[in-house]
Image (cartoon, rainbow, N blue to C red):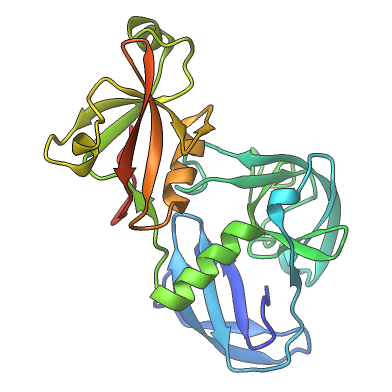
Length: 275
């Protein structure tokens, strides 16, 4: 999918297959051009390509954070080698997490617009004609359309694109020296938590900046910079998006009492440590 008139193209990492692969792109005017792979990001299943061309038709970026459930969207792609197929549907959900089944960083738009094999890397377009997502996957027991498709939000795709251009990789934040796990009802009751919203610090390095900042094993993290989260995926999205080198405020619950601690954000070198 062409996202800039000077030749940048976004698609899915699983479509490219390998960052060293030879890739060619067929343009709407039937020209076939060799594409350079600028970078890939397995965590979001995004790949950025570049072709040597100018004045290409590109969609206008939309703000995916403004999408509402039941808003109309169009899915564009090439399912079953049928070029430039357009299907119509609505947004079924936003911020959807599928517990690592599609990608490691999960913040999907769910839609009932028909997305079939071959739609991957195509555009999800709002009723305003703006790019709001990159079609990525379907949920299907048969391999065909089931009314449940997923797209990477445009805001996330744009962030990935800019990092790949600037750094050659996607820079993500993390808190070094801690390991986290979701709360169960049993653990929440034992630690005096009112519900299972939050993440348990079950192991940490006492030499880490997080320990120096006041985090302790057994703490339950319940807010991130004042934002309460209901599941671990939301927390890890907030953490990943935090600027490298910044300091964030964590709300913690310790022995039934709430407090706040400040910890520095480091650059993640791999998958965030969790279980």
